[in-house]
Image (cartoon, rainbow, N blue to C red):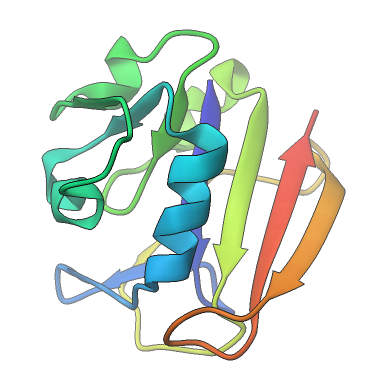
Length: 134
């Protein structure tokens, strides 16, 4: 499986059970690049509402995702799936937000950055996409 997440400088995802931030340009890019086989948790469904993405929306989406599936994570731990993950795509906000739930997949020593792209979002002036592969 392939993991996709949007994180702050501390790898934060949520604060007080709410996403730290969102940007419609990030969602547009996710749909364009990975939207043909995207697995999400119901928590994330509103981000993709009305899009042309082919979604599987399920509480247990990580367990149901196949080898080639892309999984957008916001509110679930992915650490226990490390052996199944082929790549990770992080969208970095390049700023710090308050956070109490963090991206917990170990990257160092397991994955290598193979692509890094900076772009301007709709609500963030500087977003970085990093692609990690084994």
